[in-house]
Image (tube, rainbow over all chains, first blue to last red; front, side, top):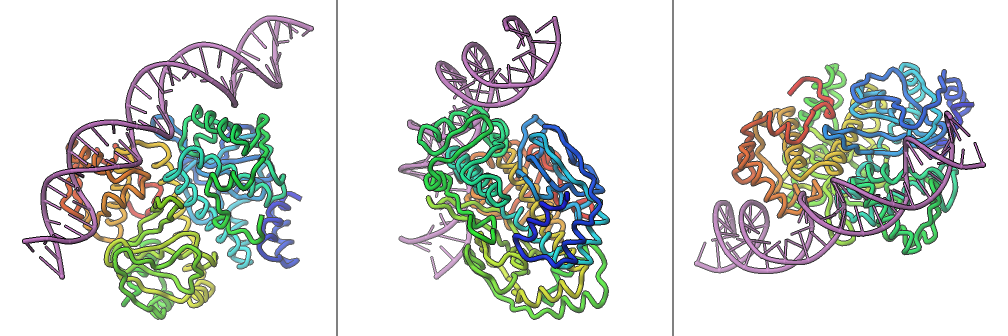
Length: 238
Length: 238
DNA sequence: CGCTGGATTGACACCATTCAATGCCCGTGG
DNA sequence: CCACGGGCATTGAATGGTGTCAATCCAGCG
């Protein structure tokens, strides 16, 4: 069933009643595949649906006049990148796939009736957007105050913890964004990302093999990034 | 009545019914004055109330190990900085006053019943937190991709537009944060903020007299900061 | 009147960017 | 099967935007 990742995510916060679970599984999904680089929503769009990520990696980003790109968040299985469209009609940024991904689209109207009929689901959605904001604040601290070394370490920590939460690997990550994408997320040049990741490898914190990342020393990586998972507001420890 | 700024803010989005307006004005506020630098909520706190800014300027920030501070948002009249506490029990950042400010505190429990009883108010609150997130994304772009000159121009534009919205001045701003605070918000040193603001003055974009800011050339300032007010999702143009 | 916090300015160091070239892996087509 | 091409990773050298340190200035205020 397409809605399973969403149900899993909600169940990680509170137990759904049979009625709630049934309502979610009954949502009319239109499942689509997205190619790398493909845009799901563009700045200025007035979406008529929300996209639920079933597989792959999707990100939100803006493009500036001079062509510079800022990635503002990565989304994986179970996330609804444009959930905000429920209350904000026009997109102020872009949403795109980074690798081949599968997305399930649900009409806004249907999602709206779901939230009015099931207040606990509405609350969970609201909470989810609040956690997105908490992540944004943390990214702001990351970019605003930390060295390249710490920024990258922090991002890697976040990616790994969030992958753990949805059950994709424990001490690693299989879909590491490219170094250029990491740079665009952290306000660094791809060149400097490369140099700094080499440093992380030489220091024995991580190993990389293409898009596969393995953490060798979690404690050191966490310390290097001043990573405290509190901002993710997880129910269980990961 | 203490709730007036909140009612004004909501009325700028949609028309309140008499019942809704009455319910808001009937909220049990505890009004308190906050001195500059005073903390309203601290990281790790589990607030039992939300703070509504009646007067002054309040900001959210985090402090890193090495003592560096990142300011993540400025709040003025009508804002509820920790509205997220409705659904996220523990604070992941600090909230503090920058200048002498007046805050009205409302118990979380009361605010929760207000939202369950009046779904349109709940929706407006949710929407408000979503706009906060949009502002955060814009700050991320600002810090991640732009020069010091553009960053400062952008921040000044935002401060002025938001001041206009709540009816505090049109082409200026009376409570400009200190250069150190601006630096902490933009990921710049106070020294460099100073140099860059001098440049803005020499270019004829702004004038400053202490905490008073006057814009001389709005078009140029907006262009310099690549400022597009769309992300504020205002109902009317400002 | 001296104190204090903020604004201002100069000199110097450095982290990160830019530009450019090279290497590597892999899918595609001849 | 091999040659080619494209995307990504890697590396070097030179430039420059910002940070750091430190001194000075200024206005408000007790």
